Amino acid sequence: MKLIKEHSINFTSKVKFDTKTLEKGHHKITYKGVRTIKCPFDYVIYQMLILDLKPDLIVEIGAGIGGASLYMADLLEINSKGIIHSIDIVDSRDEIVKKNKRIKFFLGGYQNYDLKNLEGFNNILIIEDGSHTYEDVKAALDKFHKYVSKDSYFIVEDGILDKLGWKKKFNGGPNKAIKEFLIKNDAYIIDRKFCDFFGINATFNTNGYLKKIK
Image (cartoon, rainbow, N blue to C red; front, side, top):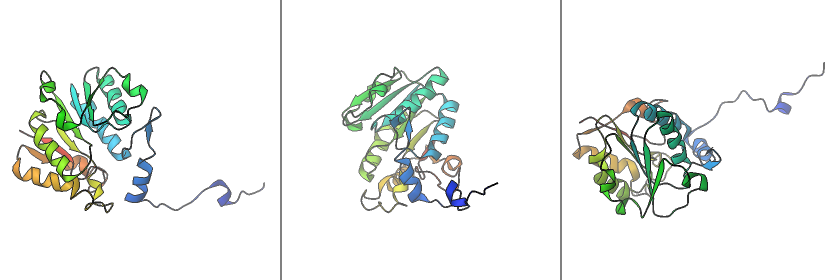
């Protein structure tokens, strides 16, 4: 029998990855063909959170193409309850996202979102995935934190920017905003269960799973 050389079947014993390779890969992730730009570690955590919490409202600050919205809408469908208020400054969503009955889009950014839209919901989860600048993250935390339900979460995405070397570009970014926010708000704690699920801050949302405890 003729032996096949190892290189001809692309076999390798090497294992090598880091935050840079994960960042490169997360830009290629799609859901139902729609670009998502989400770390796979956080995808796993999101489905655990949403299926357990069963929120009747998810507020998503930063819609983009809408792959993440679509993914979360399908998780809500499994729960047989809940809608998403997806917010952005422009509407770049894929058509399949626009047609989803569980996603309601709000144009004009988080600054122009009317907090009256939160009335009537009992179990609210909020996700900040906007510009990632310190100023915007802090402003979003200040505006929305009171409306998160007890034992639910305010998730701040992409604190990994520090590790990727972009801290200065975003004026300290999410981590700076989180740290300042927590100093003044004892109603929240960082849930290390999720931040450290795959290793210490092995998530793109470093320190960003903020659980409301009171």
